[in-house]
Length: 119
Image 1 (cartoon, one colour):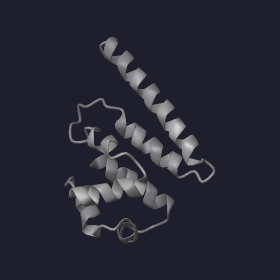
Image 2 (cartoon, helix red, strand yellow; image 1 turned 90 degrees about the vertical axis):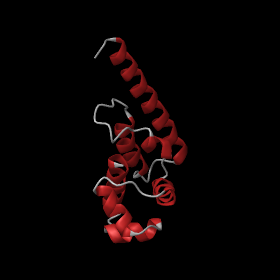
Image 3 (cartoon, helix red, strand yellow; image 1 turned 180 degrees about the vertical axis):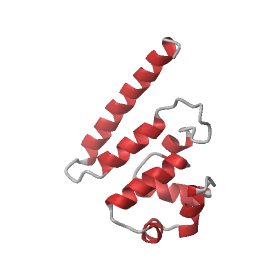
Image 4 (cartoon, one colour; image 1 turned 30 degrees about the horizontal axis):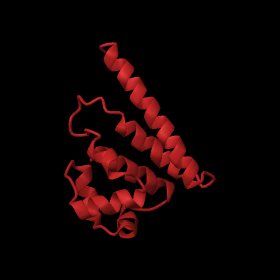
């Protein structure tokens, strides 16, 4: 949930919104987002609303392994990059999606090579 909270924070800053305004725009209680900062998980409806608002696949956060510091899953980096790509008004959705696919494939390859090398 740390990754989801970080993605929301970045998008909130980009949109120049307060946390309360962000929660209202997403359609969740501000306390839900506040509890996430403390490490608590939102209910499934709030989670879906947040990922939908971010226009990001929920599984990127579900599989990110935030709660396990030993996880080497590249999803947190991908989440951060997706937020940055989403913030570009000059980048059509089709091109953003293409860039996300290329970056994800690159990150998977790096992870595979690191695993093969025993790192």
